[in-house]
Image (cartoon, rainbow, N blue to C red; front, side, top):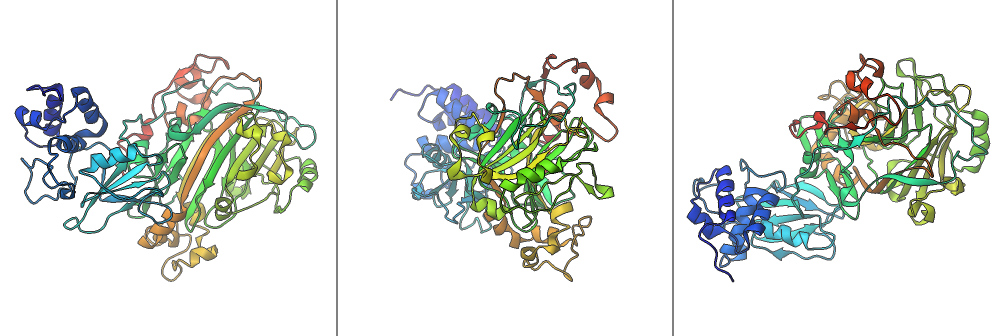
Length: 590
């Protein structure tokens, strides 16, 4: 082994980082604590995990004589720290959002470690993290005060440790600490000046295009890269939407080769729980046509839970640009597909009835008019369709596919074992798909359905209680079985969370385990396909173009600030260099 120089770059870095942690360390002492590796590796460790992990890593190599069972005791230099400080309490230390104190990971089965792994004894949390990084399928680690190291898969959930750190304690974290951009940094074209939507009838019960090609995907470890994390909630619910860094740190978001997890988290303040809302940075033209597919293993459900997978135009005041609910439900209600617009558009009911004959197990309820005005009880159009609840979808994993072109809208549920080769190879041919997969069919009436929708962005979110799940909580049998019923609380009192039955349940510890067991998405991928041979610009979604917000009630694209008017010359206009979304910054309150 080569001798270590008296003063290395790694030593200088440790001096600087220790100082940031409030610890006084001389350069000579730092030299003695530098890991017996190259300065470059030490520097990489510093960059990756911050001051606490550096001290851990440094101690790992310099203090090799320390017994692993000593945990952190004997590994930290306590200069400048209170002698009584609990060494497993990271409170107040200048750590990055990576290691999390007093929390551990639990598999969906309830096990504290992933299948195929065993508990090991490690010298410190950093070495436990290293073991996770080197173990196939590991995404999280839990390091206990006695030196025990447990590894967890991507589907595990974070659990708070509520015991006494005098006798025990735990630190957890991901397999790798990462510095991430809070929002996508894309160069996209404004969609403000695309041609108007003009309905066009397709032959038979098919769509206008025979084959599609891959245009966009969210999959694997980069699943969340092209999504915006939106903080604002407009449903008067108990959700507290997190930004990107907090979602990963708090364990509500995980991305791995096996899949992506979006889940409800812990209580963050009275009557609010951590959750997530994602909007795609891109949008796609329904008049040209596209297919969006979500392949999933699990979807959220349960009392007070209101998940949605939907499409929206946010360039214009709702519902002028159109909104399509692909899969949305609350509590144990069944999902339904509905379309909303401000135009007097109607479904082609004659064609709908003819084509619905090939579908089975349909709910015949139908609303023909797509015009939406909730104050006038005009709820948008809803075709007869197959309706299932979240528990059914979770017990029948597969692919939810939505086809939208100028002729209309069709949704499918394809069982996992039946996913066709054309979809697996990213060349879907939905006109050849089985009728038994079809969940809903919504053909548009040519004469009335003009300018009904603009380019659509994808939205995934989990709301809690609020206008739907809260208002229907008492009508749900399983919800009443929680015990949150009159006279203890007031059903549907969503404007007063302190008395609302749903909000009181969601805020109670009794909801903790059901939410961890059931209130999460487990998604293999979300993909968008456009007609084969069509070459289109990459359009910006409205929320992305407008810095994370929808067009306000006072502002339409015609009166928007100069950016909206300057970049709408043509479809091939100069692309917009767009920054991250300011409304979902790391500074958002928790």
